Image 1: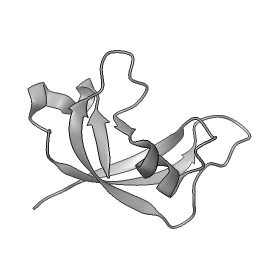
Image 2: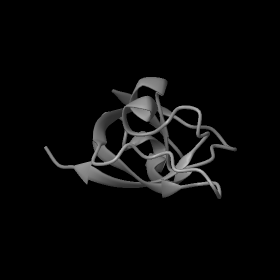
Image 3: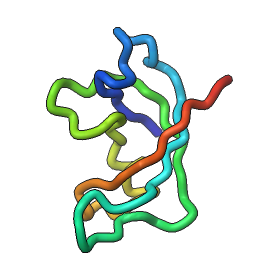
Image 4: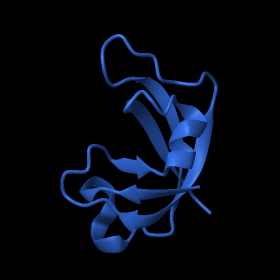
Length: 84
């Protein structure tokens, strides 16, 4: 699965190709519980998320829907780099 990185991680493209384990840990909006319990995904950063990106990592639709309700619009995540 793939993702784009915002300025927080991008570092002039240094993170391109790196993998991250992403877990949904809570709601971004009141009254919504988007997380699929006990799930996480491993994504590979393949692109830059331009200015206005609403998070640290912008997940592909496939990655997002694997760990959260795609209709939720967003969620709070925990992401950890995977060292290979």
